[in-house]
Image: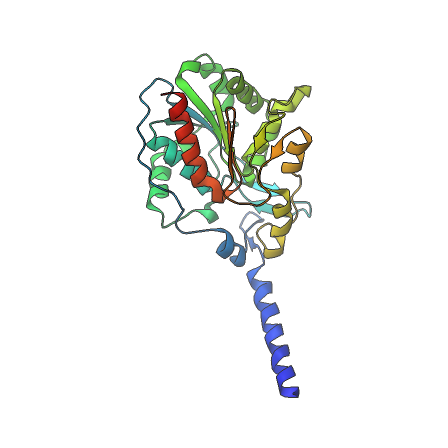
Length: 299
């Protein structure tokens, strides 16, 4: 019995040691933290679930989709540690693949024209489709348009645009919800009957429509959004290096939104001209829904 207890104790100690080292976020050279080995194993993939659907391509004039990316990398958590973030590559590129295959084109923009930041630790390196569209737009990601320049040069070209897309990733909550130009663009899309597409943490951009005491333009809408409850759990496996500095789904609920999902799953939602998805797992479904919806609308 003593030998058995000693053996069990040794196993427990070994498990604790393994968990300690596999759940520790990785320290990056700039002092930020990327997800732990365990978190990467559980939450990232080498190949996405992208379905290479054949669409009857759109042939009209409203071909353009403005994609608003983050240019910021580090999110400071409540404990002061920085999370190495940006836009999630699958959440960005898989919907773009579907929309491209449906005949639409993209204008890439960031707040001030700095390069797009991706969570490259989440890049599906064995996914040839995702790599192809990333390389196709690489120069645009490195030299995006400024939001203010888009407002100055494109607001009057409404007949050329079908939608505005805000990809997810925790980085979508850095600066974008507080940017008045984002609010102007979302209001422009809303008032001109364009579609707005987003997923995961991307709907944080919608908060920008409340700046300067404006009425929230999506009050009463149904949305799929990444749950705050999941963000609260992820520090336990070292995905985040601490608790989030702010909530998202609760803020949207407080503004009159009905959240359609409770998990970080494949839920997607179409409400009027708003198309949303719950998480990275919803990227493929969001892309299909967006492509089919736009094709139906602009046939």
